[in-house]
Length: 444
Ligand code: PMP
Image: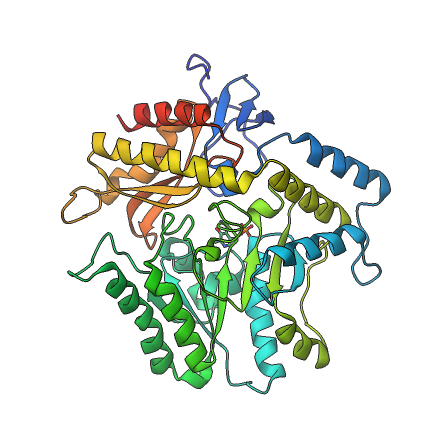
């Protein structure tokens, strides 16, 4: 990366428009954990895009598999044909799922995967004679997608506020934040207390009207890799069972190996009823996502007229061939094992940085889904002044030094700052050294 050639150059006005006025350089090529812009600047992809390119860029096996598939057939509409890559991928995915989660419904992204879970949950309830159930409880902060259904269960004010009149007002409970407010409770008690907020909310809403609870087992961007105390997960399951509420796990970011296990939820005995997957599933080679459900729930829906939902591009042969080849590489290179091992190395380094830079108040996550949160005061955990926009500045400074990281407001999109360091799961110890060196320079 050469500072003489600034990454953010001035260019002619574009007909494209993205989410903000920020201009970024034109990408030229990518290989492994690196990307190059058209000026020849090299960037380390320290966030795998948005925690997407889990197996790294330019993977030959995936590219060759996709080329072969393209020579054969790229698209055949699902109401006209089934296809072998989709069959094979569904079978392999089912093999990674908790017991009984044996049916896969393909989509093309994370929002579609979550939307499918919400709509499927509702159709299942109707199919089994529980038509009165429709409310979906979620957590604050959270991000579950940009479509209006997924957004209705998202707890992130900056993203939801403009659209609230267009959405159903769904109940939210706070996510457990042991690092902020333990109130002298043990970790276990803290977990139980926060899980019990679900029960209180179910009762306040009227248990018979509550359809589902959705959460990320290992938090992603909105919470900064939040992990709850162990006690939380089993208590959530118990409460859902007690009131007949479905448990939906959004594993869009945490799934497909990133946390050091295939699913983030595999760290605990959570037994979700529905699982949403995307991002690392296609690993950036193709848009791809899925809802995974058990046969016992799929059957009643199929028996009562079928799932009234679907997307045109879903489960196309090219996307599924890409997904299959991504899984081949995850298995061949033991990338889940590497995510666990390199996650430990990176976590150690982040903790070391937190000793040097006292404005890092917390380091957390699992495997290579890791985040650090900034605070003004280590005792009160008061966030940095909002106007400092530390979450954006850390990204911009690192970017100009050739390191891409990901950041968000921590506390519901309102205040607080964290950044995530989530390199591809192929990352080596030496590359972590490179990342940490630039990070230290950025923080300084
Ligand atoms: N759920 C989670 C947990 C996510 O992180 C995201 C994307 N950041 C989504 C859903 C939505 O995925 P997509 O952007 O692919 O629609």
